[in-house]
Length: 258
Figure 1 (tube, rainbow, N blue to C red):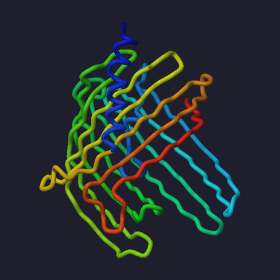
Figure 2: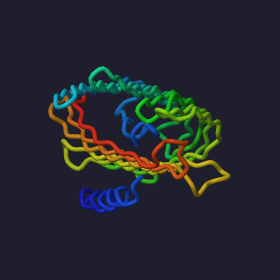
Figure 3: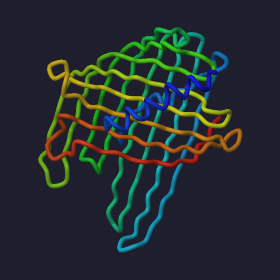
């Protein structure tokens, strides 16, 4: 019965995310990396990597690496994430990445205050650098052994520098609200589905937000190895000059988890 209820909730959510057309490197999906611990004072983490090489008219090599480490103490949890992607086409090198640090207070409660900070860049999109810091509160309205659903709401300060190829340098300093809806559940003993959607906007332009959706499906191959398939997309109603409004990405990863 639980599995049936889980499917009834997850399947419409997948359709909603695809229909609204709302990650790439624009908004970091922290919920994809969040891990539940069975005992307190526990370290956990994972490592994923990928390599793609192709030769047509141009020689293309792509390297990807994602790591995360989390510590669950008696009351609070700490999450540190890094991501690095490098794409080489002949002699041209394009890279993007981020570092993210988040603390959740009283993480075992339904209501959990959070604080976070992040550095990010995306050369292929024209984002030279982004610094942000913020805080909010998370509420898990469903929490079982097989399924978790909740939402977060808060505020953040964001500093950005943009310069697309051939475009002008643009700098922005803004306060924004940040809201998200998340769902995570086990489809089977070896398969897990993570879904999250973000709504971020300035208070003065709340109805022209940045919308982000992320869907990840993980299959366990062995005790320490998983295969992950991820679709991410972002739509920005008010993008920086010379920057496209809608972007998306598909990723496949081999994940080493501890």
